[in-house]
Length: 501
Ligand code: MG
View 1 (spheres, rainbow, N blue to C red):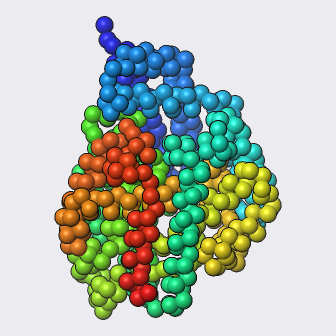
View 2 (view 1 turned 120 degrees about the vertical axis):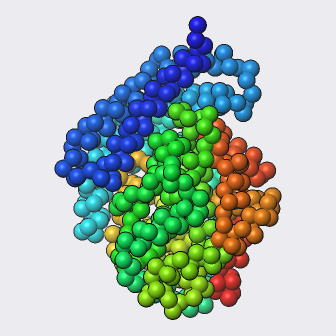
View 3 (view 1 turned 30 degrees about the vertical axis):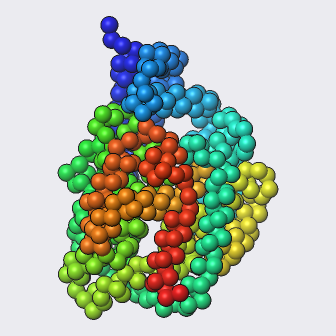
């Protein structure tokens, strides 16, 4: 007779296949589908989602998980079997905590909030979005109660994206980051605008940008034989298996950075999934372990690698040869400085490596204030601008460039934002450890190569997929828990040099 564990695996494979088919439909919707196909596509996706959710939350699934757990109880914690059971127990419990009626209200409220947000943003009309955000906040509050918490209401929300991480830990970390980065940002601003980034703001023919995006993704180690590069409005990476992990990007005809760094960023995400161990295939463990750790891999490739001088000393000649008129008269140092210009600005997604974190800290603090009833939604625009002044020293002239800029609050996704900044911190911590364990990594990086770095990442992070929690993985890979200090060292050294502080 087949073991309970094998029966469980058969179920897991079936649900996984439905979820990945859903992923293909979603990828196609963003990249290729004619707009007219939207209604039918949403119906198709809703059906698959219902099938998957129904199978996963059935009583039978819970019984099967427990039977398989008993059967594999003697296997070591690190085994694939025990890891899968741990993951399934947790996500099964979570999925059952949100009743179908609540899930239905979430899609209803979000379905209306999204177009209202688009309109409000277009017309700089916060009042138009306000009642929708109030409804979303109500759902966030209910979700926190349904998921349950011991310490803070924000904990269960954060836990969905960064399992095991507590709000108090993030707060302490972000406060320390703030304390170190505000003076650095002020010192840079005081030096004046000595970095000229005009060279990346020129006409760059899109077909050549596309050729270079493929070249550069290949150069950092993204495997095109198991990948694909597509065009979208909002870039993302998605994987259907470790042998089919796709990236997307966007092309600005007069600005080089979005396609360049968007491609590198998404390559970092996709390389994580390409590097998961084959034994985890067709299970939910064949993915990055959390939003923050996933973001650490994209930020590592985009920033630590992709905005380093050594990398461009190796690859800038190729870029110059594609764009001789635009870049022929600018040397690699000028380019390096241009792509590392620090400029406090209003828009998160356009922020530089240093000031990006302030945008996240701002959102993290405002989400808690809204959740805890300390900030009425009507007062959000003012609170936003006050925090912009405090953290970035600039105030957006409109709400469109302020509290209306992100899509995230059209759904009850509080707790997601902090993972972006956590990704920056993890990336610096991983990189510092990697180099201390294998100095070849730094030598190769100075020549624009990432082979040794990628080997380290595969061995210490990628292969495990979701077997371990973020905290377990960081401890295993670096011998320490999360620390912000490597990031502070990294940015202080880098920008002190660029800005001659
Ligand atoms: Mg990302």
